[in-house]
Amino acid sequence: MPEQRVIVVGAGAAGISAAFWLRQAGVRVRVLEAGEQIGGRAGTVAREGFRFDTAAGALPSTYAATLRLVDALGVRQEIQPRGAVIGALRDGRVHRIARRNPLTFLAARHIPARDKAALWRLGLDLGRAFRSINYLDLGSAARFDTQTVHDYCAAHYPDSVRENLLEPITRALVLTEPERTSVVDLFAACRSLLVAGHLLTHPDGVGFFLARAAGHLDVSTGAQVEEVTEAADGVRVRWRDSEGRHEEAADAVVLAVPGPAALAIHPDLAPEQRKYLENLEYSTAIVVSLGVARAPAEPSSMVLIPRDLDPDLAVIGLGHNLAPGRAPAGGGVLTAFWMSEWSGRHLGDSDDELVAHTRATINRLRPGWAEDVRAAHVARWHPALVASRVGTYAGLVDFHAHTDPAARIQLAGDFHAQSSVNASIAAGERAAHALINRTGDVWR
Image (cartoon, rainbow, N blue to C red; front, side):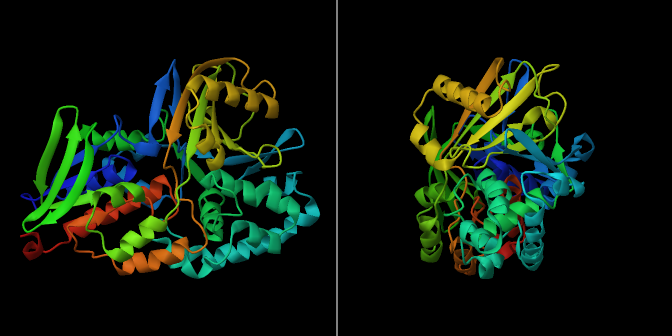
């Protein structure tokens, strides 16, 4: 398809994935990104010798679509597999679970021994749902999308298991409260966090491979797309940048943007698709990273914060434990992921205010961890992640039933599965292959 031209809207994980696979097939591709950086929530910034991931911090080894892209780039040998140790704060100490060593769970004292046996139910239910939990289309899990995480946990598990493990995992992964989150998200989180043998990391940050892929692509940043419409001979894209307004023609377009953006720029969406996207809810996220002079003596890659200890802070990431080179010698990277409601209330706070609050909160929970802060970075995500309510994934069935695989405008947003880097990469890959598989007659 050497004569075909595709415009990809969005240079996050989905957009870079779509553009890469299209280019691999010989298609001419141009990527239009409204922001000033590529990678979206899989970005990394450098400050004073520290490397801060702006949202996603590591990639579980279960991320098959990510590994396909990594392998196609030929950079798998640069990836460093790390042990996946999850910590949970309780009674003034961090209780650790090493996913590659199940015996550590039996030794964890934040859940009484008599209550741990109840987790056989989680293994059974996860086994039943396992084949339905995927990163491409979670409509396949519609039959499990019948209750919230809280209702499911309250019905089947002791309070110690619910409060110290299952609900904190949900809060950490989706940044919304378990009373509002579909139980499908818990199953998806357990598949990502508890089933993966190790984490995939890189000294340059979680999005290193996206940066490599973008280096071979035609990417324009600061390009705000205003409208995408079909025409008799293809697709028209209207966009603006610092130099003014522009209009371009293409044979096809991939919309690799969140649901609200797709609604705003694609007026010809099918009514059923529009209804689904209009009903989607997104969380808001403030992510504050601190570079500290002395790394805490804690081996976990993340520490879950039960909400009775702090209702607003979901998890503290320890980026220096993910890969060497994330901090100067002896230093550490602490990343606070704030819950959606708190983030929404504080979006307008200054960076200094958010850094000060984060530092004080971490030091209250773990005295001394954030004592000597040398650098900081604040990321604000609005919208952030799809906040899945009961019925969200059931709605995907109808959404995909009205998706034309041969359409010139393909949707590759973050709403086909639980929001993650891998789900976005999978969505971009699927959109690219849908266009690659179009017949010559359709392209003409």
